[in-house]
Image 1 (tube, rainbow, N blue to C red):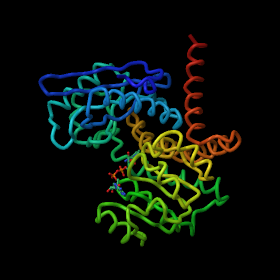
Image 2 (image 1 turned 90 degrees about the vertical axis):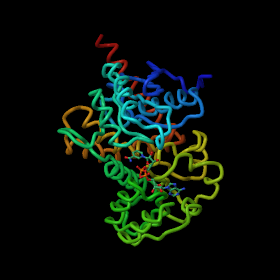
Image 3 (image 1 turned 90 degrees about the horizontal axis):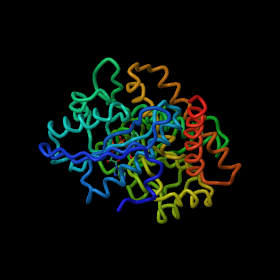
Image 4 (image 1 turned 45 degrees about the vertical axis):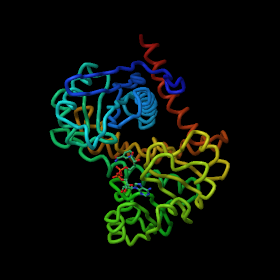
Length: 353
Ligand code: NAD
């Protein structure tokens, strides 16, 4: 039934079923201490409602940690729609979902996630104001990928400073797995700094763009994680750091944008034991949510967004230093720091009450 490991301190879990449109969705609100629970809506053909529910709980908690570590006035939440994004989309379904979000009265703010597009978000926005990541409008924040990439670039600089003692990236080699929206923007930042790029992808056009624009060296998808490089940057899939891949890594830094890179938390220990510095994914890839949060606040300010994204450098250095001092994995230290931020805010509220 419900995976007890996923049900940790959640404030609310709502199930919605709209017969007319066929919508079946869960919205999980993990914690609203820091602000309204913000997190994207995922459309996925889950094998069962229980799988969807557990995913919503897990992802909502992840958003609390991500938003806390990014220093945002936002809590964590997530929505999942049980449907196939290739065959099941309809205007009626997204309108029904928009009404579900509206019914929570601002406790949850939705946005784009896997299986969703900005067109879908636009339909949802016709039924609720509690939505961000829209493509047009006064405070629209648009495509988050360049902002995510800028944060990852800052994170790579922090990791290189900490692990290799270098202040600049010129002459280093970075292997980027996946040159899609995030990866290609990251390559631009790295190329501008004189980094040698090794890339892989499963879409030829994406590889051609990386070769043409940056003179990148292409390797097979099977090889990208194990090539010799100063930094390996996973920017495609989750769970790429597992028993098999960690054994063959040939780098001292993993710093990339993909969500849920560790197959499970124990792989953080494996990386530490191998002397590999891991930049926790939800910290290094928070540039996108920082950008979206400007829109959620209703007063988008590019200067504020850029300052927050620059701060990812310092946040990661802090995590690396504490992890070294306590001889513990960076992923565990990041989770603890996020919990501390939330607990401190709770304490402040209790005292003020
Ligand atoms: P995307 O779909 O635009 O790009 C992913 C790329 O990875 C594609 O080019 C795809 O062909 C490639 N790919 C897929 N399987 C591969 C494989 N086995 N080997 C090599 N390449 C492969 O997605 P994106 O928006 O660039 O996001 C990339 C990752 O970053 C995802 O994990 C996403 O969840 C995460 N992320 C994205 C954002 C954002 O702002 N877009 C924010 C936070 C996290």
